[in-house]
Length: 266
Ligand SMILES: Nc1ncnc2c1ncn2[C@@H]1O[C@H](COP(=O)(O)OP(=O)(O)OP(=O)(O)O)[C@@H](O)[C@H]1O
Ligand SMILES: [Mg+2]
Figure (cartoon, rainbow, N blue to C red):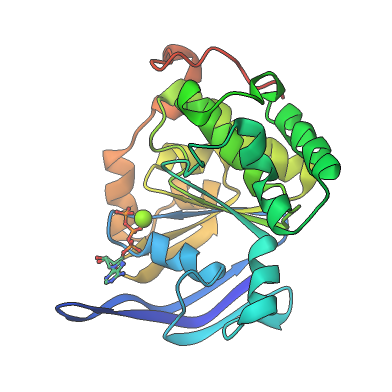
């Protein structure tokens, strides 16, 4: 379980202090696919980057599985990060490494044997249905395939948590559905708790059991996804709903545009 207690963040920017988050209280339960939605600049990435201490909070505490991680350094910090996989909008794969070598990278860092690493990587590539692309380079894959490699790499350390920051924003709607369904399957089958950042209500609606709506650095609404959609309380949630994007809700109506042919088998 992840708990944020009165968490705030002030950045020291070149033009002075900038408050990105204030008074954030959140509880993400084991097994959740927890959505964080909000407009650009609302503070979503800041919030999620604090969970693995890529950013340090300037106020409040972060508790993960009962331990206060806020001041972790050194070995504790490395272990924390190994327990929290992360995937990003631009995939962030190593371009000079093959698909297999991308997935074995976290295991090399941990000094696992070559054979054990390769075996584990193939297993993960089978999970994301890409074992036949093991010797390819990232540039030889579609966007959806690259994101699936990034997912496999994020799972290499057997994390309990996975952070997804706009993981499908660079993908067309059909590929988005495939990646979202893969994340849902990883949640269901491997029990990985997910924190999914998105500006898309359709993405949130498709996979998140709970969502928090963030506006100008404040959580303005939080609850079961269906309840928030059925009965939005805040102005910003109404706006996001009005603005809405339905494409992801109707996968069959859209064709992929980037050559992504394969469907991830569920
Ligand atoms: N390193 C930084 N230094 C100063 N200000 C920052 C820094 N990173 C982010 N900010 C500011 O903090 C606020 C929140 O940024 P954040 O990246 O968390 O937003 P976001 O909700 O993820 O937006 P987007 O949807 O565009 O990715 C913004 O006003 C941004 O300008
Ligand atoms: Mg962001």
